[in-house]
Amino acid sequence: MIYRSMQLQPRTWQARVGIILAAALGVGLVVAFLVLAVGVAILLLPVVAVLAAIGWWRWRKIEAAMREEAARREPGGDDARTIEIDYRVIDEPNRRG
Image (cartoon, rainbow, N blue to C red; front, top):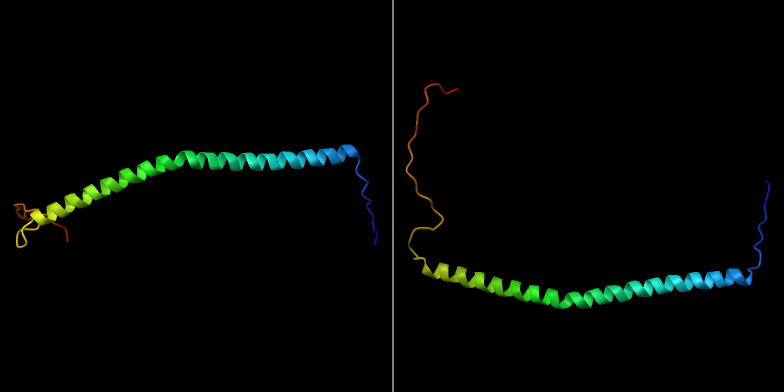
């Protein structure tokens, strides 16, 4: 078997500065993303709160209308969901079967 050895060269001061700048850039990007995300969340909180309040208000309004409609119905009356129609059965002479 052939073994190859690899030796790392000592880093020069330019390489060390480059590594430090790359790390600083990465940390800066992460911090900028977090600040942006928190800022957007803070801006959207009032919008979400207003939409939730409108939805809650509309839901209460619909519930009240349904309760009023149920109270108006007579307990022994016809069901409001029943549709009554007149129909006639037509006998077809050419029916298959």
